[in-house]
Length: 321
Image 1 (cartoon, rainbow, N blue to C red):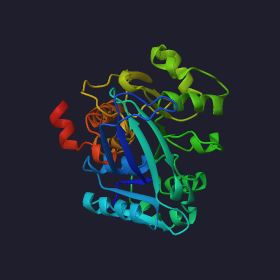
Image 2 (cartoon, helix red, strand yellow; image 1 turned 90 degrees about the horizontal axis):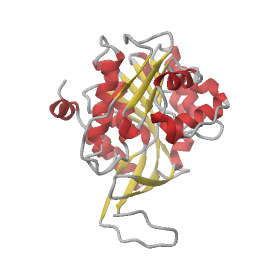
Image 3 (cartoon, helix red, strand yellow; image 1 turned 30 degrees about the vertical axis):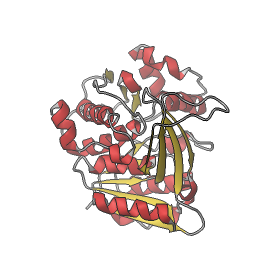
Image 4 (tube, rainbow, N blue to C red; image 1 turned 180 degrees about the vertical axis):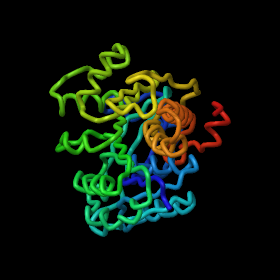
């Protein structure tokens, strides 16, 4: 019985490691290559499951070799999946270039993810019936996301939306159906522009005062907003429901780690946040976010995305309870 249902994307990642990003027209020698399972939805499902929380994943893949790799990895992880296998679109794939600082540049073809049938999602209602948390991203077609939100509302699940990427056609009514929103700086700025007609420079967010950040977050109309600020940690903003916290808003720092690849760190955060809502359901929300921060930081010490998601034991061994 799944406690967390993740409806989202699967992408086969292909990553090249370089000392510096190639300039336009330059061919640069890579000193390493890695391929493995990824996609925001699948990464987050793996991160959640590795915290020891029963998790189920719903997504679309092609009828091809990459789709078979996805199924094999899920079985090896003991991660139950409901795959819609499309014969009209291939499994998604990405190209990731990672420099010596762990920074990345990514190109992705979402392929089958953009053809996830809303009726296929609705047919998975049994997964939602006994779950507690629904976790979503935006690498699928929006009508499939809306169908998942409808099921989440019907069955009374806490709905967690990682608004990545902020796609064309995204409307405020869909975003505001989430209970918890987890944008990074760029996504937060784009949402403010799209939903509140407020333009800000994402590079300035971490340096803004807490009261100002809180006021900006309240403009999105979601009860709890958690902005991930990379090396600067995260910022939490609550509305009327504080989820056990004393304060309406606060920051939590990141942990010190030896970063080699930041790809997937945001997915580690969102997936672990969903798991921690179950694991620490009687604790203040601050405890939930702290665990997600730690998992995200630790994920950057390993190259790759889904395979880099830390286990609960690894996080607690490194940082304590």
